[in-house]
Structure formats: structure tokens, C-alpha cells
Length: 94
Image (cartoon, rainbow, N blue to C red; front, side, top):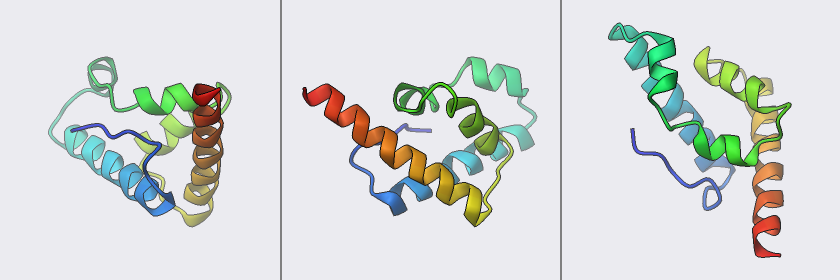
């Protein structure tokens, strides 16, 4: 799966990307790949790890791995991502 830069994505783009990642992981698990091997050999979480606060990152990973797509959880995750991406962009431009 080709990773994407997060900063150019709007809210809908982020949501689509999250669902795309969930589908990709689900497909790999259905093909019999071990979750530990998958996590050890993927970089799809790297951009998220760079911008998300330490306390939010594990929640993000669990949400993605478990393919949680409820509106409340996804909207909360998008709120945190948008805030974190904005802060990261400000930090890099200073």
C-alpha cells in the first residue's frame, strides 16, 4: 500500500485514507498474514506516529487494526488528527 502525506488531506480525504488502511490491513489478515509480522514490516502508521500525541497514538492503532468505523469514534479520531496535523505544520514552519 502506498502511504500518503497527511497534511494535504482534508477531513474527508483523511477519513477515506483511514478506511483504505483498514481495508488493506483486513485484506492482509484474511490472506493469513500474522499481525505481528505485518506491524513489523509496514510503514503505514509512520506519518500518523509523527503527528499524533503519544497518548492518542495507541488508540489510533487499535481503532485501525480492529476496523472500528463508528461515526463517533471516527469523528473523534479525525478531530485529533486535524488538530495534530495543524500543530505539526505550525511547528515545522516556525
